[in-house]
Length: 303
Image (cartoon, rainbow, N blue to C red; front, side, top):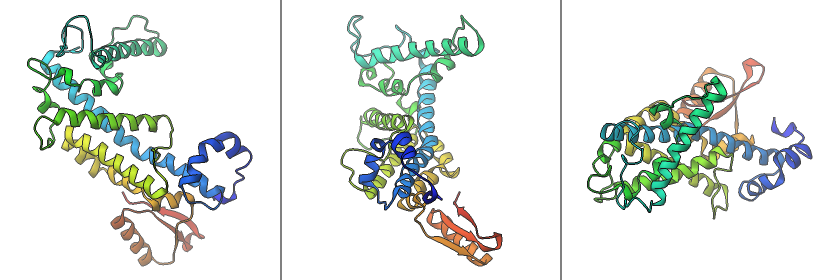
């Protein structure tokens, strides 16, 4: 139980820090340190729920672009002289185009360094797939830049091969919409990866607004995945990953982590059945106490 732990001075003041918890103190309802830490731990659970969605978005986009461009330009399509852009003059390289080249160079170096560190291979020649897998997420945002759009360039001729979902209704906006979605997802992924309060953004004043913000991020991630591959989205839905993320990003799940939500006493199979059915229908966790097991506590979580 969270309320049986001594939080100060070590846990909060030294290991978590009051500075880290200051934003939680303002935004989340709490009456004591236990409930405050519950909100802090809820953020960790939110990050865990987002992680498979973010991985799916990045890997799906990366592989879809790489497959299309490999078929169009050949393996190692990012090499200078192969990947062309609109304002190419051999001298002034646009920032995004330069970033794509540098990102693949860094990926090449990462593969070599890892092979040297893990396998003592000093002169490993990275394969196409090894380089692609080590590329930074920003690579796939930069490659969607308008510099690559035009006659005899990679866009728009490969758009339909990369983005197989429903396109925006307005003609000529698919590349822009995709790029904006990737930017949003990438920046949010960075917050998750760096253990930041992922519910946080400018202007959020209370926990209800934090929940809305998180659900907006879920929608953006799913929109990107669906634009690339409706089949991949279907997989995530049917596997329960989407439902899990949506369940975690609720006030109810926040209260569960603060250990202030209702605990249902279960003394019969019929009541247990009703609670299981309710959890499934509402996509919500139910905390229960089973008297036949010595008042043991359990949480029912829908799949």
